[in-house]
Image (cartoon, rainbow, N blue to C red; front, top):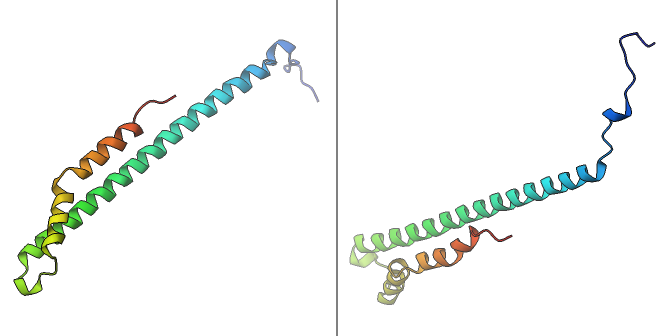
Length: 109
């Protein structure tokens, strides 16, 4: 049943600009995909930072334990200590982060 207050829908009220809406939705999907990709890169970079940080702390902790323990308990050779020192204090970790960290935040389009 139709009441007197209801009016028929005119053709002017219907949006027939469907291809433009599809293009807009594709642009919106591309923007969301790029945003999601950047969020994913950011998470991977943070995880990599944590892995590097925890590895450096583990090496430093091992080095300190080796120095604190008595001579009978020491398990690292002189060569092992030198390689650990080179890894910790030569800046290898910083150079790796500098080399690959900058490429993660560059705006490549």
